[in-house]
Structures are given as structure tokens and as C-alpha cells.
Length: 443
Image 1 (cartoon, rainbow, N blue to C red):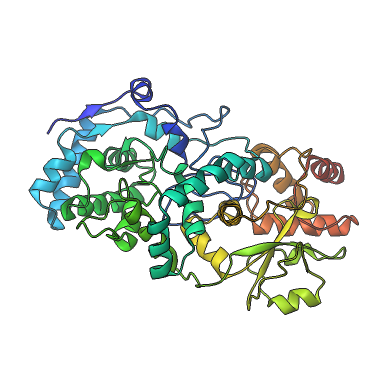
Image 2: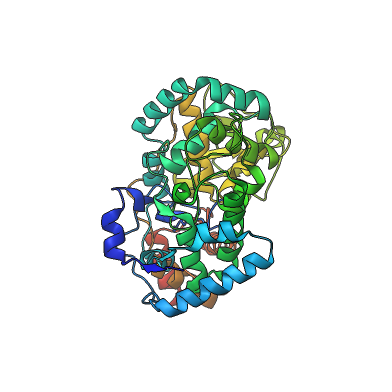
């Protein structure tokens, strides 16, 4: 067995420009949600640094990556034995691990803890840019038959498939050039995510065993997400389809397979045929922003009775169980989202990601962009500032849980309680002015 170590500098020189923008399968932002099975690292509610963004310059690795050649060889040898015990053939094991590489750059990326993140409007400016809309329309024109067949079979609009394709890999222009076996072996050996990495590595071996792809073509992000729409190996095994009928499920080169697999994923996870993802809305002046949470669900008629109105002539979608989301609190636009929005979250459990997919899909279909204005003059709080805010809110009796620098439901609830008690609009959106008020109140 020949195992090579690849330095981060050498690896970066070998990679095409832009590949490291896929370091993300991880997002960092002002609000983090649990990652779906299409991504390795935790997805963030404002996914500024997810698949399509470069690692932030301020981020640093938490520790030097391990570089013990003998240790990596022992780990690979042990994993080979366990994989063989699970029925993986010697042929596949030889193909996978002869010449396996440890890539320190992957460990560095996995350990990043960015201090700052982009605001959601900055993320959407990139994810739903005019350029991406134009390119998406061109791609859907080129592959209209493939998109139509996927929509007919699975009930998922071609514009939704195209939007996921655009957000995940910019229509295949940069879905990553890390060899998946090397990436997952590196993560498994490093130890921080051993359980997940080994599960994905077993699945990757099964993909090789099935003959869907050769090892050298099985490439993707540093976190193990692969192909045009960034399936991790277990998702590939569960949802990838051979749409073009050539006997292989190829999400790297066959756009028919890419579209069919993506649509199948969504359909199997609850996509409702003929229903939209959601729509921008206007909230009443007295709206209770404590209700702007995904786990608060009411029918469209109930939201209308509460004063929620359509923003344009399309009216409100008819949902039996809809949620209101206000990503920038009372400062920015609001949206009514339904079951298909929650299905997109199964693909990547970040509200900003699902919103980007929905809005890009609408633009690809010819709709306008967001009508409301984003609060572009508001600067995002850093992770340290959010931790400080959480600590102070706890001291003041507004429980937020353990300070971690992440804006989740508990932190928003504590922040709303503080705002309410001080006569402020209780939208739970963190700003520097609000942080100053909290610091003043805490003395």
C-alpha cells in the first residue's frame, strides 16, 4: 500500500482556481441550524460561507493538523480490514486505498471557526445574482428535455432543480476537485468527525463497488460532497438514479442523472407536486415576531386573518401549514413558506440556503426579485459579540442557554424578551445598537 501526504501549499497549487470555494459544505453565520445529510459540517442560517463562498480570511485553524505518516497508514490498514469484514471486495479496497493521500488542507478547513460572517443580503446578492440567473436560464434551455423529464417523473419543477444546481456548484463550474476517498480518509483519521467520515467512506466504497464511478472521477468538496448538486455518499446510495439509462448513476458528467437524482431526493423527502416553496409577504405593523419561527405553522387563511398580506398580484399561496420567516427581523423582508420550503431544508438545513433556492427558482421562472429592502447599513455581529450578548442576557435573566456565538431559537427568544421589557420591537434580530443596550443594562 502506497500512501502519500500532500502538503496544503502543494495541494492548493494543484487545484483549479475556485475549487476551494467548495470548502464549505459548512456554513457560518448569525444563526446556525443542524446540517442535513447533504453536507458534513453544520449549516448556518445565514450561509455566507457555504458551498459557494471562499473561506473567510479571518478564520484560522484551531490546531495544527496531524501529519504522522505511520499513523495514517495504520488507520487506513485498520479501516480496510473493517471494510473487508463488511463485504467490500479486495479489488475495490485496492482501487480505493492504494496510493491514498492524507491532505492536511482538509483538516485545516474542517477546523475553521470563522469570527465573522456575511449578512443574508450579501449572501443572497451572490447566490441569486443576475449573472447566476442568466446562466441558469441558459443551462435550463440547454437541458430543457432533461429538466422536463425529471419534473414529469418526480413532480419537482426544473427551476427548483436548476436553483439547487446553481447554488451548490454554480451549474457544475466548481463542484470540487478533492478526491472523495482521500477527503473522507483524512477526516476519518483526524478523528474530529470519525463516525460520520467512516460512514461516508463505507458508502463511497459501495459506490465504487457498484461501478457507478471510478475512483479518480469521484471528486467533490473537502467534506465529501460530490458532483453537480453535492451529494454525500450515503445520499448518493439512497437517492441517485440512472436517469439516462446507461447503467451508471453519474452525478459528475450526466446532467440527466444530476437532475433526476436531485428531484428524486426532494420527492422522497416530501416535495408536494404543484405547490410553490413560498412567497414574499407584507406583515402588519403590530406583528408578533415571536411567531416568525419555522416551527410556528398556521394556514394561509389564519395568517391572512392576522394581517399578513401579499406583496404583489400573485397573492398568497394556499398552504394548510405555513410559517413566516423574517431573516432580518423587523428591519427587512418577510416570507410565507410552506411544506416544500421545509423539503428544501432537508437538502441543506439552513434557512438562508432554502430561501436562496426558492428565490433563484422564481427568478429562473421569470419572476422579480425581493420587493422589500434589506437593512444594508446594519453590520453583522461577530461570533465573539454574540457570545458576549448571550452571556449578558443570561446574567440579566433572559435565558439563552450556553453562550456559543450562534443565534438559535433560544437566543432569539431571550433577545425578544429583553426587547419587550425595554419597549422595543421584539423581533429577536441582533444589532450593534441592541448589544450596546444590553451591555448598558448589565452595567
